[in-house]
Length: 255
Image 1 (tube, helix red, strand yellow):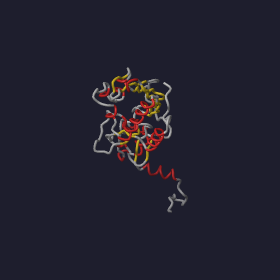
Image 2 (cartoon, helix red, strand yellow; image 1 turned 180 degrees about the vertical axis):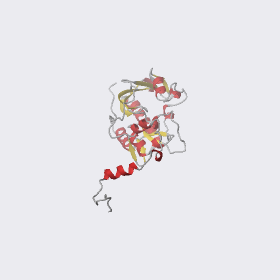
Image 3 (cartoon, helix red, strand yellow; image 1 turned 135 degrees about the horizontal axis):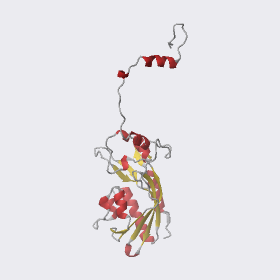
Image 4 (cartoon, helix red, strand yellow; image 1 turned 90 degrees about the vertical axis):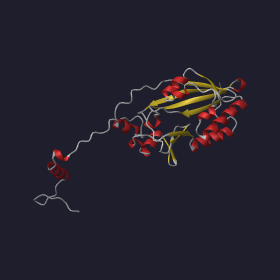
């Protein structure tokens, strides 16, 4: 490799060579390019190693310390009653159309994934048949927070079933545009499947945390987001299927 030398033949330090090059550059040789206004938020959303790490202050939006969502289905599986927080939860999660459940739709028509629908149907059938409550832990993220819920499913008289979901833990994070239903969607793109149990998203053959999906799919580089669909990952499907085949397998509720 050829080295740069001075007039005496001695090696010129790298830093001196850089200074020499820079001294020949003029201001007119540079073009100023301003970064996108949301650059920091997009960078923060791509950080997956440690959620506590932030390049600037964490979002100021508060995550509620407690949240309870309740609803009831009749013997025909139609949602007949909802709790006080139902409408607020629907609006807060960008689903105002669900604030008042339709009286002519069964609970199962709200599922767009066959596997997920069938597992929930089996679980409800089991609760009714055994007349024992069940307990299920679920991940249900908001765009601005990671959230874990505990759901109890309790049989009542005349085939009615009571669903009660209570927020058990929430962790604020920079808003994830993929989960924001108000963000523009490109319907020509393949939907990103999200697991209704663990909240992970599918990227290729892998199920990853949603921030990892955003990073791996390079979604931050897009002006619009792909649509999302709700299903169940292989690990959660196998776990739920195995538990449903074993008496008392799904966490038995004491309520």
